[in-house]
Length: 260
Image (tube, rainbow, N blue to C red; front, top):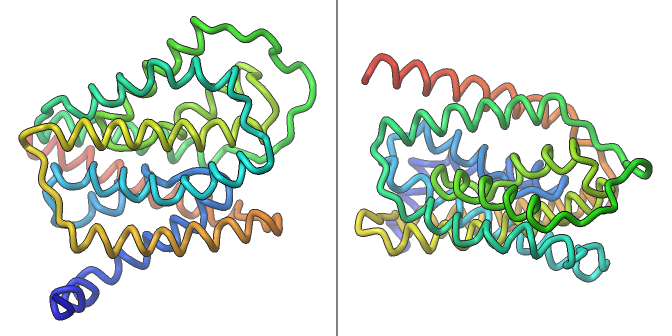
């Protein structure tokens, strides 16, 4: 058993190292890192059916700590959050349960990664305190959650990379509350999407590598939380990560066109 873990560490060291860096960066801004985990795994030789589950498990590990911190700080506003997740959870499960072929998966993945790269590159951490939309539109929030949840479940991410920009554009709340909401949204939708995949007959997973990666992102998440508490800027790291994700997405898209 120990020898098998050592072999994985030797063969997949670059994946493990990149997962650590991604977890630090994303945890420092309240996200899970699912899009970047997918980008890294897409560069490996792993089967596409394994990639989604690994990314979601790592998402769950990272954002769980963030949610606990936000709850202790009483930042989570449940009256506004519950409508967002009420439909997102079943739709994330449905997206994870669906059997999609390799072509559909990598096409969706490349588009998602491009969006994630664009968001990371142009995003700035600003504290919005004026012109906030005070109206709690339950129907609209539920619709947002359903759409983002379904897409997230299919691709294998928590959905924060889609939800956060949407909430900022609609002036949903102040930036800190949006980050807290995105963390909880990522957590519950990652769990739902993972459960949907688990109940799918095509579900397969390299548990030994997953355990190593989960432990790695747990450490990275703790470091990211410390950096966040000290308010250290991660803008340049985020931009570098955005470039990497954009490169991977274009490479995947090119491979899809050549292969299919």
